[in-house]
Image (cartoon, rainbow, N blue to C red):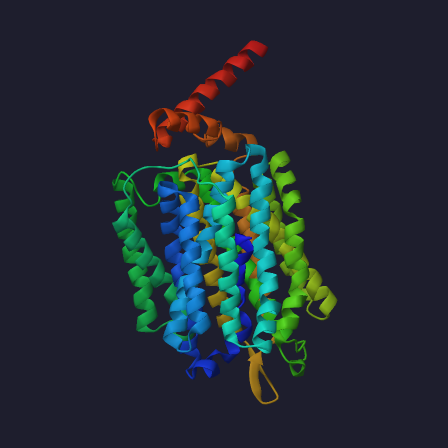
Length: 498
């Protein structure tokens, strides 16, 4: 449910984007800060909250994030000034951290064989939440006002907060230590510079001094941050772990597939809402466009067990590569399926099916390659890179639609060729992502090469150790000892059987 909630925060506001300047009596560029604020907060929240979750408790950080989201939603529900609503949207950006932290809780609490199915289902809720958000946001806005969108988010946040407090126990897997404040500050500023440049490049001008300065600041800060993280004992993000072959390849593929994913959400939705006078548009309202996208989002949920079956039988690598290839083929099909609504929806369903497989595989690949005590941090970085891909896609789509135009009824509008071009670059991005994923280790080799200190341990061991010592224990050391013992036992059994 948290996964669906995250998607709703991103998509509920999409139907009112065109009316934002009128609602707040401002320019489109200024009103766009309601979108940008959430994006920037998300970039800061994902790595920071994920690391804090590994250190101080995953359930605790989910509760804190939900409280911040509820406060932000209430501000938006009662606020009438643009600055106050921008602050509200910024606080809602903390929702994105719920995904990596929630997936990490699943790894801690569930039997190993059940994790792929659980992760696949949570990844799929991103799709269903996104599909529901468009028609729901349009309906609430049409029946009431934009305040209703924030009231809904506040109510949903309260329900989830109560559910987390009642049903989810705090994870026993923690990594005691000191939080890397300086590292978090540097990377947060760097990511803010990058995403701000990407999101505002179209309106400020890609060659403007502001945009170029932000990109330059991002590079400089990144050059300073990497050696610093390698030097300190307890970094925000363990770059040595991130540089391991399975993690690095998965993260590269994540950026490419994230880019490909957003091409469909933005381009197809806008194509459906284009007026019929263009010769290719369908003249749908935002609500109708959302309903047209709903079959693809719903399919993602039903494909969760399929993703888990493929992962358990053939490995997460096969799931990732297959999903990316299906996405690529779906986009190629969309190039030739624009003509009728049925074929257009069919193409979006194919892309969504591939996306469901690919997104389900990413966290599994990450978790199999990192220590159990770094699960949330590693998933947070992966989710952040996915956001980098989607943000870059948003900028690319906006640039293409603005540069390839036609005149309909005396108004300049995107040409049909612009949408086809977006589908082509999305297809290429997905297929390159599949090619990158092909370099992942094979299923068994992956498990052997990326030995997980927590893969064989039992949570009962942690409970016993905590009872004996009273309070928290250094689980990094304990998990390694338990895993070594179990590995030796396994070797002895195999030797005996031979």
